[in-house]
Length: 322
Image (cartoon, rainbow, N blue to C red; front, top):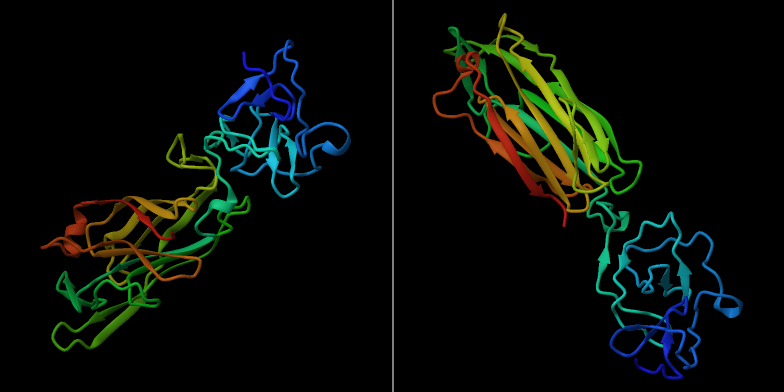
């Protein structure tokens, strides 16, 4: 067994000493003098753990995991039962001031630190729109939205759904007020395009089932794990129909939205109707819009094909903050 040199560096509890390459157990037969660690846990100038000090996620631990090195206070602190920081695997070297370099942090479970989040709020919006200038059904003609995909605010749409989720990375993450409304429907003369009648539909449903944490209670049954305890999940289930046509088929979406502020991603999974066009966007922390999905109606589809439901799947994961 190696003899302990007089100037050896010891762990705070005195059970280990650093031989320059690895920690060695101090045996009862060892006669070397134990060096006093700067800031070592104990009595006198060594001090006790600072009251209310929280173990950071990335820090240096003593070999037995009972102490962590506080670089701000320049002393060892006792790891309390309530600390949730990740413990390093004490195989690194200690210096004379007691700072060991571990092999990396291990996060307990799937916990995440608020300091590691890439976004603190995100606004999501989804539109259902008719790309054509005019669409006909049952011998009648209706004004379309006459546009391509567009993330701009206030663009013409059959259905618009918008929500902001704030407080991401904290225990107070919440779904804010929502805006779910329909655009005005216009019945027009098929030849001249003159407006003959107009009305605005009332959408059914909207955003709901918000939950933040490392599990999500699926409203359709069961509970599943999320990526981390800062992940927020909500649903969008909305439909609407032509208010000028009796018993008109509905168009809409049934989506589950997952926001991971640690990864900076938004995931959307579910189904939309195959007609007309659908688009979804996100903006993190008031930034620029990022496209989540843009789905055009398939060739040959029109309002009549809605009588034979043909749901289109949506399953995307997009980075919206980095």
